[in-house]
Length: 127
Image (cartoon, rainbow, N blue to C red; front, side, top):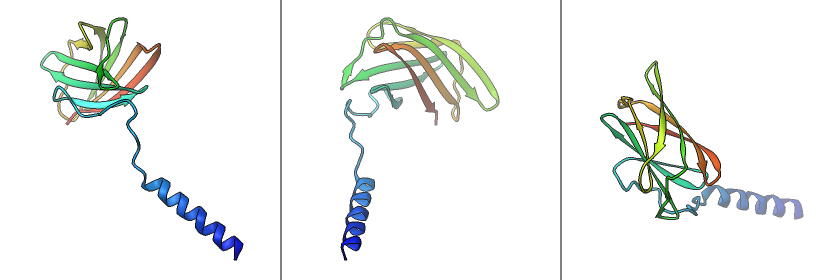
């Protein structure tokens, strides 16, 4: 009887852990600029595709995070075509990558250095 009770408790705890919604400790992941939001290193990264490249907005705890000192590479896979461009900090919470075409269906990977002292790798699927 005791073993059955322990199994029942273990099953109940396991199923309730699966049903819990993950908490977003660092703010909402809703887009502010009409882009695609991903979270990495506890920071929200919003990729906004533009005609000549992309802008990435940084948000931490629902507050704009300064982009100063952050740099990296943006890799874009448009089908079988791979393109890499530099990502550079601009004003405020913006990072810019220029000189690349990002088509619907593209996969984008940003490897960003010095995001709160660490390297962040962020993956986006463009719709």
